[in-house]
Image (cartoon, rainbow, N blue to C red; front, top):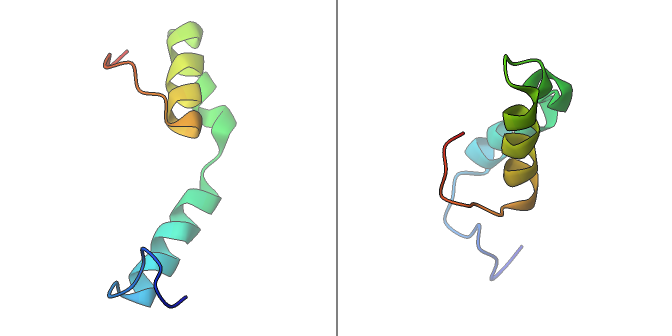
Length: 55
């Protein structure tokens, strides 16, 4: 990946981070005490649309 945003980063670290995100179970975020807040947090995480609120 010459010229990518990953230049200079440890490839093992990148692989570990990618593995961590691949292992996330999205439904585990929906089991909290406030399902609406859980859905909002998950959507913000997936879309990257941050509204500035922490639930």
